Amino acid sequence: MVNEPWWKQAVIYQIYPRSFYDSNGDGIGDLKGITEKLDYLQQLGIQALWLSPVCCSPQDDNGYDISDYQDIDPLFGSLDDMDELIRQASMRGIRIIMDLVLNHTSDEHPWFLEAKKSRNNPYHDFYVWREGTEGTPPNDLKASFGGSAWEWVPQCGQYYLHQFSVKQPDLNWENPQVRKEIYKMIRWWTERGIGGFRLDVIDLVAKEPDRGVMAEGRHLHEYLKEMSREVFQGRDLITVGEAWSATPERAFLYSNPDQSELSMVFQFEHIVLDQQPGGEKWDLAPLPFVTFKKTLAKWQTQLYGKGWNSLFFSNHDLPRSVSRFGNDGEYREKSAKMLALCLHGMQGTPYVYQGEELGMTNVRYEISEYRDIELLNMYRERKEAGCPEKEIMESVYAKGRDNARTPMQWNDGVNAGFTSGMPWIRVNPNYTKINAEQEIADENSVFHFYRKLIGLRKQERVLIDGRFELLLPEHDSLFAYTRENEDCVLLVICNFASAAVSYDLPGNWEDGEVLLSNGKQKFSQGILEPYDAYMVIRRKEDVQ
Ligand code: TEU
Ligand code: CA
Picture 1 (cartoon, protein in one colour):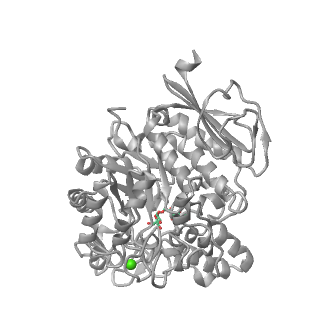
Picture 2: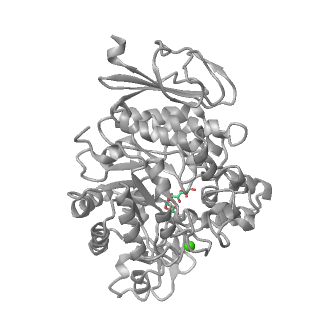
Picture 3: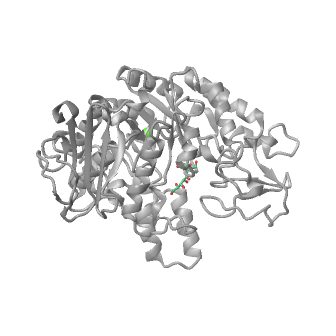
Protein backbone atom coordinates (compact mmCIF):
# COMPACT_ATOMS: atom_id res chain seq x y z
CA MET A 1 0.00 0.00 0.00
CA VAL A 2 2.86 2.31 0.80
CA ASN A 3 3.97 2.15 -2.80
CA GLU A 4 0.52 2.34 -4.30
CA PRO A 5 -0.30 5.64 -6.00
CA TRP A 6 -2.48 7.89 -3.82
CA TRP A 7 -5.36 7.85 -6.26
CA LYS A 8 -5.99 4.14 -5.69
CA GLN A 9 -7.17 5.05 -2.22
CA ALA A 10 -8.94 8.24 -3.17
CA VAL A 11 -12.57 9.10 -3.68
CA ILE A 12 -13.20 11.79 -6.28
CA TYR A 13 -16.09 14.22 -6.19
CA GLN A 14 -17.34 15.61 -9.49
CA ILE A 15 -18.52 19.20 -9.61
CA TYR A 16 -20.60 20.63 -12.41
CA PRO A 17 -19.55 24.20 -11.68
CA ARG A 18 -22.51 26.04 -13.15
CA SER A 19 -24.84 24.13 -10.84
CA PHE A 20 -22.81 23.83 -7.66
CA TYR A 21 -22.90 27.15 -5.81
CA ASP A 22 -23.37 30.70 -7.06
CA SER A 23 -21.37 33.22 -5.03
CA ASN A 24 -22.44 36.43 -6.80
CA GLY A 25 -26.15 36.05 -7.55
CA ASP A 26 -25.99 35.86 -11.35
CA GLY A 27 -27.70 32.48 -11.26
CA ILE A 28 -24.64 30.50 -12.35
CA GLY A 29 -22.37 28.55 -10.05
CA ASP A 30 -18.75 29.71 -10.00
CA LEU A 31 -15.24 29.06 -8.67
CA LYS A 32 -15.64 31.26 -5.61
CA GLY A 33 -18.78 29.28 -4.88
CA ILE A 34 -16.76 26.07 -4.88
CA THR A 35 -14.15 27.58 -2.59
CA GLU A 36 -16.91 28.59 -0.18
CA LYS A 37 -18.13 25.00 -0.02
CA LEU A 38 -14.77 23.33 0.57
CA ASP A 39 -15.54 22.65 4.22
CA TYR A 40 -18.61 20.71 3.17
CA LEU A 41 -16.51 18.64 0.77
CA GLN A 42 -13.85 18.08 3.37
CA GLN A 43 -16.49 16.85 5.78
CA LEU A 44 -17.60 14.32 3.18
CA GLY A 45 -14.01 13.08 3.14
CA ILE A 46 -13.14 13.18 -0.56
CA GLN A 47 -9.54 13.61 -1.79
CA ALA A 48 -10.02 15.30 -5.14
CA LEU A 49 -12.48 17.42 -7.08
CA TRP A 50 -13.02 16.95 -10.78
CA LEU A 51 -14.43 20.18 -12.20
CA SER A 52 -16.33 20.04 -15.45
CA PRO A 53 -14.80 22.65 -17.82
CA VAL A 54 -14.36 26.20 -16.55
CA CYS A 55 -12.19 27.59 -19.35
CA CYS A 56 -13.41 30.33 -21.70
CA SER A 57 -16.26 29.06 -23.79
CA PRO A 58 -19.30 30.28 -25.71
CA GLN A 59 -21.13 27.63 -23.61
CA ASP A 60 -22.77 25.91 -26.55
CA ASP A 61 -22.21 22.62 -24.70
CA ASN A 62 -21.77 24.10 -21.21
CA GLY A 63 -18.02 24.55 -21.47
CA TYR A 64 -17.19 21.41 -23.48
CA ASP A 65 -16.56 23.86 -26.31
CA ILE A 66 -13.42 25.74 -25.29
CA SER A 67 -12.32 29.00 -26.90
CA ASP A 68 -9.31 29.62 -24.62
CA TYR A 69 -7.65 26.76 -22.77
CA GLN A 70 -5.54 29.09 -20.64
CA ASP A 71 -8.13 31.34 -19.13
CA ILE A 72 -11.23 30.98 -16.96
CA ASP A 73 -14.61 31.88 -18.40
CA PRO A 74 -15.80 35.10 -16.72
CA LEU A 75 -19.03 33.24 -15.91
CA PHE A 76 -17.02 31.17 -13.45
CA GLY A 77 -14.53 33.82 -12.30
CA SER A 78 -10.87 34.44 -13.06
CA LEU A 79 -7.48 32.76 -12.99
CA ASP A 80 -6.98 34.32 -9.57
CA ASP A 81 -10.12 32.56 -8.35
CA MET A 82 -8.73 29.30 -9.72
CA ASP A 83 -5.39 29.82 -7.97
CA GLU A 84 -7.25 30.56 -4.76
CA LEU A 85 -9.41 27.46 -5.13
CA ILE A 86 -6.31 25.30 -5.71
CA ARG A 87 -4.65 26.84 -2.63
CA GLN A 88 -7.67 26.54 -0.34
CA ALA A 89 -8.38 23.01 -1.48
CA SER A 90 -4.79 21.94 -1.00
CA MET A 91 -4.90 23.22 2.59
CA ARG A 92 -7.69 20.69 3.13
CA GLY A 93 -5.85 17.87 1.40
CA ILE A 94 -8.01 18.14 -1.71
CA ARG A 95 -6.62 18.21 -5.24
CA ILE A 96 -8.22 19.87 -8.23
CA ILE A 97 -8.70 17.81 -11.37
CA MET A 98 -9.41 19.76 -14.56
CA ASP A 99 -11.54 18.60 -17.41
CA LEU A 100 -9.45 18.68 -20.59
CA VAL A 101 -11.45 18.77 -23.78
CA LEU A 102 -8.84 17.84 -26.37
CA ASN A 103 -10.88 16.19 -29.10
CA HIS A 104 -12.37 19.48 -30.27
CA THR A 105 -12.37 23.19 -29.55
CA SER A 106 -15.07 25.79 -29.88
CA ASP A 107 -15.55 27.21 -33.36
CA GLU A 108 -14.73 30.52 -31.65
CA HIS A 109 -11.25 29.37 -30.62
CA PRO A 110 -8.60 31.57 -32.32
CA TRP A 111 -7.16 28.44 -33.99
CA PHE A 112 -10.46 27.75 -35.70
CA LEU A 113 -11.12 31.38 -36.55
CA GLU A 114 -7.80 31.28 -38.42
CA ALA A 115 -8.27 27.77 -39.81
CA LYS A 116 -11.52 28.56 -41.55
CA LYS A 117 -10.17 31.67 -43.31
CA SER A 118 -8.53 29.70 -46.12
CA ARG A 119 -6.88 26.45 -47.06
CA ASN A 120 -3.49 28.14 -46.90
CA ASN A 121 -3.85 29.46 -43.40
CA PRO A 122 -1.14 28.09 -41.07
CA TYR A 123 -3.89 26.87 -38.69
CA HIS A 124 -6.00 25.20 -41.35
CA ASP A 125 -4.47 21.82 -40.68
CA PHE A 126 -5.28 22.09 -36.94
CA TYR A 127 -8.74 20.73 -37.83
CA VAL A 128 -10.10 17.87 -39.91
CA TRP A 129 -11.11 18.98 -43.42
CA ARG A 130 -12.37 16.99 -46.37
CA GLU A 131 -13.34 17.76 -49.93
CA GLY A 132 -16.94 17.68 -51.00
CA THR A 133 -19.47 19.84 -52.75
CA GLU A 134 -21.98 22.00 -50.97
CA GLY A 135 -24.92 19.83 -49.95
CA THR A 136 -22.97 16.60 -50.46
CA PRO A 137 -20.77 15.89 -47.42
CA PRO A 138 -17.78 13.50 -47.75
CA ASN A 139 -19.73 10.67 -46.10
CA ASP A 140 -22.74 10.01 -43.89
CA LEU A 141 -21.06 10.20 -40.48
CA LYS A 142 -23.48 11.50 -37.86
CA ALA A 143 -22.72 13.94 -35.05
CA SER A 144 -23.42 12.85 -31.49
CA PHE A 145 -25.79 15.75 -30.97
CA GLY A 146 -27.73 15.11 -34.19
CA GLY A 147 -27.32 15.83 -37.89
CA SER A 148 -24.30 15.31 -40.11
CA ALA A 149 -20.81 15.33 -38.61
CA TRP A 150 -19.66 17.54 -41.51
CA GLU A 151 -20.12 21.29 -41.90
CA TRP A 152 -19.53 23.22 -45.11
CA VAL A 153 -17.26 26.28 -45.11
CA PRO A 154 -17.72 28.19 -48.39
CA GLN A 155 -14.52 30.23 -48.20
CA CYS A 156 -12.46 27.01 -48.05
CA GLY A 157 -14.71 24.97 -50.29
CA GLN A 158 -14.36 22.16 -47.77
CA TYR A 159 -16.16 20.45 -44.94
CA TYR A 160 -14.87 20.25 -41.36
CA LEU A 161 -15.56 17.37 -39.03
CA HIS A 162 -17.49 17.81 -35.77
CA GLN A 163 -18.32 14.69 -33.76
CA PHE A 164 -20.43 16.79 -31.41
CA SER A 165 -22.19 20.09 -32.13
CA VAL A 166 -21.44 22.21 -35.17
CA LYS A 167 -19.75 24.63 -32.74
CA GLN A 168 -17.28 21.90 -31.66
CA PRO A 169 -14.90 21.33 -34.61
CA ASP A 170 -12.65 18.28 -34.18
CA LEU A 171 -8.94 18.90 -33.72
CA ASN A 172 -6.57 17.12 -36.09
CA TRP A 173 -4.32 15.04 -33.84
CA GLU A 174 -2.39 13.78 -36.86
CA ASN A 175 -0.81 17.22 -36.96
CA PRO A 176 2.20 17.14 -34.56
CA GLN A 177 1.85 20.90 -34.10
CA VAL A 178 -1.60 20.40 -32.55
CA ARG A 179 -0.25 17.88 -30.08
CA LYS A 180 2.66 20.15 -29.22
CA GLU A 181 0.34 23.06 -28.45
CA ILE A 182 -1.82 20.82 -26.28
CA TYR A 183 1.16 19.55 -24.26
CA LYS A 184 2.39 23.09 -23.73
CA MET A 185 -1.01 24.09 -22.40
CA ILE A 186 -1.22 21.10 -20.04
CA ARG A 187 2.25 21.85 -18.63
CA TRP A 188 1.14 25.40 -17.96
CA TRP A 189 -1.77 24.09 -15.86
CA THR A 190 0.38 21.65 -13.91
CA GLU A 191 2.67 24.53 -13.04
CA ARG A 192 -0.34 26.34 -11.57
CA GLY A 193 -0.86 23.44 -9.18
CA ILE A 194 -3.53 21.38 -10.90
CA GLY A 195 -3.55 17.86 -9.40
CA GLY A 196 -4.77 15.96 -12.41
CA PHE A 197 -6.84 15.80 -15.54
CA ARG A 198 -9.97 14.13 -16.77
CA LEU A 199 -9.59 13.70 -20.51
CA ASP A 200 -12.88 14.19 -22.30
CA VAL A 201 -13.70 11.58 -25.00
CA ILE A 202 -10.04 10.71 -25.25
CA ASP A 203 -10.87 7.55 -27.22
CA LEU A 204 -12.06 9.75 -30.12
CA VAL A 205 -9.01 11.93 -30.71
CA ALA A 206 -7.35 9.63 -33.27
CA LYS A 207 -10.42 9.52 -35.49
CA GLU A 208 -10.19 8.22 -39.04
CA PRO A 209 -13.35 9.61 -40.61
CA ASP A 210 -12.62 8.19 -44.05
CA ARG A 211 -12.84 4.69 -42.64
CA GLY A 212 -15.82 5.64 -40.48
CA VAL A 213 -13.66 5.05 -37.39
CA MET A 214 -14.17 7.55 -34.60
CA ALA A 215 -13.23 5.67 -31.43
CA GLU A 216 -9.89 3.88 -31.02
CA GLY A 217 -8.25 5.05 -34.23
CA ARG A 218 -5.00 3.27 -35.11
CA HIS A 219 -2.75 5.96 -33.63
CA LEU A 220 -4.67 6.48 -30.39
CA HIS A 221 -2.39 4.65 -27.99
CA GLU A 222 0.69 6.02 -29.68
CA TYR A 223 -0.62 9.56 -29.03
CA LEU A 224 -1.52 8.73 -25.44
CA LYS A 225 1.96 7.35 -24.78
CA GLU A 226 3.47 10.46 -26.28
CA MET A 227 1.29 12.75 -24.18
CA SER A 228 2.08 10.77 -21.07
CA ARG A 229 5.84 11.02 -21.71
CA GLU A 230 5.63 14.69 -22.57
CA VAL A 231 3.46 15.93 -19.73
CA PHE A 232 2.24 13.38 -17.20
CA GLN A 233 5.16 11.17 -16.25
CA GLY A 234 7.38 12.34 -13.44
CA ARG A 235 4.64 14.61 -12.12
CA ASP A 236 2.34 13.64 -9.28
CA LEU A 237 -0.88 13.71 -11.29
CA ILE A 238 -4.01 11.67 -11.63
CA THR A 239 -5.16 11.21 -15.20
CA VAL A 240 -8.54 9.80 -16.12
CA GLY A 241 -9.49 8.87 -19.65
CA GLU A 242 -13.16 9.03 -20.60
CA ALA A 243 -13.65 6.17 -23.08
CA TRP A 244 -17.16 5.03 -23.99
CA SER A 245 -15.66 2.48 -26.36
CA ALA A 246 -13.22 0.84 -23.94
CA THR A 247 -13.10 -2.92 -23.51
CA PRO A 248 -11.07 -4.53 -20.71
CA GLU A 249 -8.33 -5.37 -23.24
CA ARG A 250 -8.11 -1.71 -24.26
CA ALA A 251 -8.18 -0.70 -20.63
CA PHE A 252 -4.90 -2.59 -20.08
CA LEU A 253 -3.37 -0.01 -22.37
CA TYR A 254 -5.13 3.12 -21.09
CA SER A 255 -4.40 2.26 -17.46
CA ASN A 256 -1.33 0.08 -17.65
CA PRO A 257 0.25 -0.02 -14.15
CA ASP A 258 3.56 0.98 -15.75
CA GLN A 259 1.85 4.37 -16.20
CA SER A 260 2.82 4.58 -19.86
CA GLU A 261 -0.57 6.15 -20.64
CA LEU A 262 -3.05 7.23 -17.94
CA SER A 263 -3.86 6.45 -14.32
CA MET A 264 -7.27 5.03 -15.03
CA VAL A 265 -10.01 4.51 -17.52
CA PHE A 266 -13.58 5.84 -17.15
CA GLN A 267 -15.69 3.44 -19.18
CA PHE A 268 -19.44 2.98 -19.61
CA GLU A 269 -20.11 -0.63 -20.46
CA HIS A 270 -22.44 -1.06 -17.47
CA ILE A 271 -24.25 2.15 -18.43
CA VAL A 272 -24.98 1.58 -22.11
CA LEU A 273 -26.66 -1.76 -21.48
CA ASP A 274 -30.13 -0.42 -21.99
CA GLN A 275 -29.26 1.04 -25.34
CA GLN A 276 -30.27 -1.64 -27.79
CA PRO A 277 -27.52 -2.57 -30.22
CA GLY A 278 -27.81 -0.30 -33.22
CA GLY A 279 -30.72 1.43 -31.55
CA GLU A 280 -31.23 5.03 -30.60
CA LYS A 281 -29.23 6.55 -27.78
CA TRP A 282 -32.40 7.33 -25.86
CA ASP A 283 -34.13 3.98 -26.13
CA LEU A 284 -35.88 3.07 -22.94
CA ALA A 285 -35.32 -0.66 -22.95
CA PRO A 286 -35.37 -2.07 -19.42
CA LEU A 287 -32.02 -2.68 -17.81
CA PRO A 288 -31.17 -6.39 -17.88
CA PHE A 289 -30.03 -6.71 -14.27
CA VAL A 290 -28.08 -9.96 -14.60
CA THR A 291 -26.12 -8.57 -17.57
CA PHE A 292 -25.55 -5.35 -15.65
CA LYS A 293 -23.84 -7.08 -12.74
CA LYS A 294 -21.98 -9.54 -14.95
CA THR A 295 -20.61 -6.59 -16.90
CA LEU A 296 -19.40 -4.89 -13.75
CA ALA A 297 -17.98 -8.23 -12.56
CA LYS A 298 -16.17 -8.78 -15.86
CA TRP A 299 -14.33 -5.49 -15.44
CA GLN A 300 -13.52 -6.34 -11.83
CA THR A 301 -11.94 -9.68 -12.62
CA GLN A 302 -10.30 -8.90 -15.95
CA LEU A 303 -8.66 -5.68 -14.84
CA TYR A 304 -7.36 -7.11 -11.55
CA GLY A 305 -3.62 -6.42 -11.32
CA LYS A 306 -3.52 -5.19 -14.92
CA GLY A 307 -5.24 -1.85 -14.97
CA TRP A 308 -7.39 0.53 -12.97
CA ASN A 309 -11.04 1.45 -13.37
CA SER A 310 -13.31 4.29 -12.30
CA LEU A 311 -16.43 3.40 -10.31
CA PHE A 312 -19.55 5.45 -11.03
CA PHE A 313 -23.26 5.14 -11.62
CA SER A 314 -23.84 8.77 -12.55
CA ASN A 315 -22.20 11.90 -13.88
CA HIS A 316 -23.20 15.13 -15.66
CA ASP A 317 -24.20 13.20 -18.83
CA LEU A 318 -26.35 10.60 -17.11
CA PRO A 319 -29.62 10.52 -15.22
CA ARG A 320 -29.51 10.52 -11.42
CA SER A 321 -28.42 7.08 -10.22
CA VAL A 322 -31.15 6.72 -7.59
CA SER A 323 -33.80 7.39 -10.25
CA ARG A 324 -32.25 5.05 -12.76
CA PHE A 325 -30.95 2.09 -10.76
CA GLY A 326 -32.71 2.57 -7.44
CA ASN A 327 -36.10 3.88 -6.41
CA ASP A 328 -36.67 7.60 -6.12
CA GLY A 329 -40.07 7.23 -4.44
CA GLU A 330 -40.74 5.34 -1.22
CA TYR A 331 -37.23 3.84 -1.01
CA ARG A 332 -35.22 6.84 -2.15
CA GLU A 333 -32.93 7.06 0.88
CA LYS A 334 -32.54 3.37 1.30
CA SER A 335 -31.83 2.64 -2.35
CA ALA A 336 -29.42 5.59 -2.64
CA LYS A 337 -27.39 4.06 0.19
CA MET A 338 -27.62 0.61 -1.36
CA LEU A 339 -26.22 1.89 -4.66
CA ALA A 340 -23.39 3.66 -2.88
CA LEU A 341 -22.42 0.59 -0.91
CA CYS A 342 -22.60 -1.64 -3.97
CA LEU A 343 -20.38 0.69 -5.98
CA HIS A 344 -17.82 1.65 -3.35
CA GLY A 345 -17.26 -1.99 -2.39
CA MET A 346 -15.74 -2.74 -5.78
CA GLN A 347 -12.17 -2.25 -6.93
CA GLY A 348 -11.36 1.06 -8.58
CA THR A 349 -11.57 4.76 -7.79
CA PRO A 350 -15.10 5.79 -6.79
CA TYR A 351 -16.63 9.00 -8.12
CA VAL A 352 -19.39 10.87 -6.31
CA TYR A 353 -21.31 13.16 -8.63
CA GLN A 354 -22.54 16.32 -6.90
CA GLY A 355 -25.86 15.78 -5.14
CA GLU A 356 -25.58 12.00 -5.32
CA GLU A 357 -24.49 12.11 -1.68
CA LEU A 358 -27.89 13.69 -0.89
CA GLY A 359 -29.85 11.20 -2.97
CA MET A 360 -30.86 13.88 -5.48
CA THR A 361 -33.33 12.71 -8.14
CA ASN A 362 -34.33 13.21 -11.77
CA VAL A 363 -36.78 15.96 -12.75
CA ARG A 364 -39.83 16.23 -15.00
CA TYR A 365 -40.02 19.70 -16.53
CA GLU A 366 -41.82 21.36 -19.40
CA ILE A 367 -39.67 21.30 -22.52
CA SER A 368 -39.12 25.08 -22.28
CA GLU A 369 -37.35 24.62 -18.94
CA TYR A 370 -34.58 22.41 -20.35
CA ARG A 371 -31.20 23.80 -21.43
CA ASP A 372 -29.02 20.94 -22.66
CA ILE A 373 -28.05 21.00 -26.35
CA GLU A 374 -28.17 17.22 -26.66
CA LEU A 375 -31.62 17.04 -25.09
CA LEU A 376 -33.05 19.92 -27.11
CA ASN A 377 -31.61 18.65 -30.41
CA MET A 378 -32.97 15.19 -29.69
CA TYR A 379 -36.38 16.65 -28.90
CA ARG A 380 -36.42 18.64 -32.15
CA GLU A 381 -35.22 15.75 -34.31
CA ARG A 382 -37.81 13.37 -32.94
CA LYS A 383 -40.54 15.95 -33.19
CA GLU A 384 -39.66 16.47 -36.88
CA ALA A 385 -39.70 12.70 -37.38
CA GLY A 386 -43.30 12.67 -36.15
CA CYS A 387 -42.68 10.97 -32.81
CA PRO A 388 -45.52 11.62 -30.32
CA GLU A 389 -44.79 14.33 -27.75
CA LYS A 390 -45.53 12.07 -24.82
CA GLU A 391 -43.03 9.47 -25.98
CA ILE A 392 -40.30 12.06 -26.48
CA MET A 393 -40.91 13.51 -23.04
CA GLU A 394 -40.63 10.07 -21.44
CA SER A 395 -37.14 9.79 -22.95
CA VAL A 396 -36.26 13.26 -21.71
CA TYR A 397 -37.38 12.35 -18.19
CA ALA A 398 -35.47 9.08 -18.22
CA LYS A 399 -32.27 9.98 -20.06
CA GLY A 400 -31.96 13.75 -20.42
CA ARG A 401 -28.65 15.14 -19.21
CA ASP A 402 -30.34 18.03 -17.40
CA ASN A 403 -31.59 15.52 -14.82
CA ALA A 404 -28.13 15.67 -13.31
CA ARG A 405 -27.56 19.35 -13.98
CA THR A 406 -30.21 20.99 -11.82
CA PRO A 407 -28.70 23.11 -9.05
CA MET A 408 -27.19 21.54 -5.96
CA GLN A 409 -29.73 21.52 -3.14
CA TRP A 410 -28.07 23.22 -0.17
CA ASN A 411 -31.04 24.06 2.05
CA ASP A 412 -34.81 24.53 2.04
CA GLY A 413 -34.60 28.29 1.36
CA VAL A 414 -35.27 30.12 -1.90
CA ASN A 415 -33.67 28.30 -4.87
CA ALA A 416 -32.40 25.65 -2.48
CA GLY A 417 -29.76 28.11 -1.30
CA PHE A 418 -27.97 27.73 -4.64
CA THR A 419 -28.30 31.33 -5.76
CA SER A 420 -29.83 34.58 -4.59
CA GLY A 421 -30.62 35.36 -8.23
CA MET A 422 -32.45 33.59 -10.99
CA PRO A 423 -30.96 30.09 -11.49
CA TRP A 424 -29.87 29.28 -15.07
CA ILE A 425 -31.99 26.15 -14.85
CA ARG A 426 -34.90 25.47 -12.55
CA VAL A 427 -34.19 23.89 -9.17
CA ASN A 428 -35.70 20.46 -8.54
CA PRO A 429 -38.87 21.25 -6.56
CA ASN A 430 -38.07 18.50 -4.05
CA TYR A 431 -35.33 20.64 -2.46
CA THR A 432 -37.55 21.36 0.55
CA LYS A 433 -37.21 17.68 1.48
CA ILE A 434 -33.83 16.84 -0.04
CA ASN A 435 -31.02 19.22 0.84
CA ALA A 436 -27.54 19.28 2.34
CA GLU A 437 -28.50 21.12 5.51
CA GLN A 438 -31.02 18.46 6.54
CA GLU A 439 -28.77 15.63 5.44
CA ILE A 440 -25.93 16.91 7.62
CA ALA A 441 -28.23 17.31 10.62
CA ASP A 442 -29.50 13.73 10.38
CA GLU A 443 -26.86 11.16 11.26
CA ASN A 444 -28.75 8.43 9.40
CA SER A 445 -28.84 10.37 6.17
CA VAL A 446 -27.52 9.43 2.74
CA PHE A 447 -24.79 12.05 3.26
CA HIS A 448 -23.47 10.42 6.41
CA PHE A 449 -23.68 7.02 4.78
CA TYR A 450 -21.36 8.30 2.02
CA ARG A 451 -19.08 9.85 4.61
CA LYS A 452 -18.76 6.50 6.38
CA LEU A 453 -18.15 4.62 3.14
CA ILE A 454 -15.43 7.08 2.14
CA GLY A 455 -13.92 6.71 5.60
CA LEU A 456 -13.88 2.91 5.33
CA ARG A 457 -11.73 3.11 2.21
CA LYS A 458 -8.97 4.61 4.34
CA GLN A 459 -9.27 1.89 7.00
CA GLU A 460 -9.82 -1.33 5.09
CA ARG A 461 -7.05 -2.21 2.70
CA VAL A 462 -9.16 -4.98 1.19
CA LEU A 463 -11.32 -2.32 -0.46
CA ILE A 464 -8.27 -1.29 -2.46
CA ASP A 465 -6.54 -4.56 -3.20
CA GLY A 466 -9.04 -7.38 -2.56
CA ARG A 467 -9.69 -9.83 -5.35
CA PHE A 468 -13.31 -9.70 -6.55
CA GLU A 469 -15.64 -12.66 -6.91
CA LEU A 470 -19.26 -12.44 -8.01
CA LEU A 471 -21.71 -14.54 -5.98
CA LEU A 472 -25.21 -15.63 -7.03
CA PRO A 473 -24.50 -14.54 -10.62
CA GLU A 474 -27.93 -15.52 -11.97
CA HIS A 475 -29.98 -13.99 -9.15
CA ASP A 476 -32.31 -11.44 -10.69
CA SER A 477 -32.38 -8.88 -7.88
CA LEU A 478 -29.35 -9.50 -5.66
CA PHE A 479 -25.91 -8.13 -6.37
CA ALA A 480 -23.50 -10.02 -4.13
CA TYR A 481 -19.74 -10.31 -4.20
CA THR A 482 -16.69 -10.86 -2.06
CA ARG A 483 -13.34 -9.10 -1.98
CA GLU A 484 -10.46 -11.04 -0.52
CA ASN A 485 -6.80 -10.45 0.37
CA GLU A 486 -4.34 -12.20 2.74
CA ASP A 487 -5.98 -10.70 5.82
CA CYS A 488 -9.70 -10.88 5.30
CA VAL A 489 -12.75 -11.53 3.19
CA LEU A 490 -15.35 -8.85 2.65
CA LEU A 491 -18.91 -9.58 1.63
CA VAL A 492 -21.09 -7.03 -0.14
CA ILE A 493 -24.70 -8.02 -0.65
CA CYS A 494 -27.34 -5.69 -2.07
CA ASN A 495 -30.98 -6.06 -2.96
CA PHE A 496 -31.88 -4.05 -6.06
CA ALA A 497 -35.62 -4.80 -5.69
CA SER A 498 -38.50 -3.22 -3.79
CA ALA A 499 -39.52 -6.65 -2.49
CA ALA A 500 -37.91 -8.82 0.18
CA VAL A 501 -35.96 -11.77 -1.23
CA SER A 502 -34.55 -14.95 0.15
CA TYR A 503 -31.35 -16.54 -1.06
CA ASP A 504 -28.82 -19.17 -0.27
CA LEU A 505 -25.24 -18.09 0.28
CA PRO A 506 -22.29 -20.41 0.88
CA GLY A 507 -20.44 -19.97 4.17
CA ASN A 508 -21.54 -18.40 7.39
CA TRP A 509 -21.47 -14.63 7.47
CA GLU A 510 -23.56 -14.04 10.56
CA ASP A 511 -20.48 -13.92 12.83
CA GLY A 512 -18.81 -11.40 10.58
CA GLU A 513 -18.48 -7.77 11.55
CA VAL A 514 -20.94 -5.49 9.79
CA LEU A 515 -18.82 -2.58 8.57
CA LEU A 516 -21.79 -0.74 7.15
CA SER A 517 -25.39 -1.38 6.29
CA ASN A 518 -28.54 0.53 5.45
CA GLY A 519 -30.63 -2.08 7.28
CA LYS A 520 -30.14 -3.70 10.64
CA GLN A 521 -26.99 -3.65 12.71
CA LYS A 522 -26.75 -7.41 12.65
CA PHE A 523 -26.58 -9.42 9.47
CA SER A 524 -29.10 -12.29 9.29
CA GLN A 525 -28.25 -14.55 6.41
CA GLY A 526 -30.92 -15.83 4.04
CA ILE A 527 -33.26 -12.90 3.60
CA LEU A 528 -32.91 -9.30 2.52
CA GLU A 529 -35.53 -6.58 2.89
CA PRO A 530 -36.22 -4.15 -0.02
CA TYR A 531 -33.01 -2.38 -1.07
CA ASP A 532 -31.07 -3.81 1.87
CA ALA A 533 -27.31 -3.54 1.57
CA TYR A 534 -24.64 -5.01 3.85
CA MET A 535 -20.88 -4.88 3.94
CA VAL A 536 -19.60 -7.60 6.24
CA ILE A 537 -15.97 -8.48 7.01
CA ARG A 538 -14.36 -11.66 8.31
CA ARG A 539 -10.75 -11.27 9.44
CA LYS A 540 -8.66 -14.33 8.75
CA GLU A 541 -7.19 -14.61 12.27
CA ASP A 542 -10.81 -14.86 13.58
CA VAL A 543 -11.59 -17.59 11.10
CA GLN A 544 -8.69 -19.86 12.06
O1 TEU B 1 -19.25 13.11 -23.31
C1 TEU B 1 -19.06 12.16 -24.32
C2 TEU B 1 -20.29 11.55 -24.84
O2 TEU B 1 -20.15 10.60 -25.60
C3 TEU B 1 -21.63 12.10 -24.48
O3 TEU B 1 -21.99 12.97 -25.49
C4 TEU B 1 -22.65 11.05 -24.28
O4 TEU B 1 -22.73 10.19 -25.37
C5 TEU B 1 -24.02 11.62 -24.06
O5 TEU B 1 -23.91 12.75 -23.28
C6 TEU B 1 -24.94 10.64 -23.37
O6 TEU B 1 -26.22 11.19 -23.28
C7 TEU B 1 -18.29 14.10 -23.11
C8 TEU B 1 -18.76 15.03 -22.02
O7 TEU B 1 -18.84 14.33 -20.81
C9 TEU B 1 -20.06 15.66 -22.45
O8 TEU B 1 -20.61 16.46 -21.43
C10 TEU B 1 -19.78 16.48 -23.68
O9 TEU B 1 -20.98 17.02 -24.18
C11 TEU B 1 -19.10 15.66 -24.77
O10 TEU B 1 -18.03 14.86 -24.28
C12 TEU B 1 -18.49 16.58 -25.82
O11 TEU B 1 -17.37 17.24 -25.28
CA1 CA C 1 -22.09 33.22 -10.33
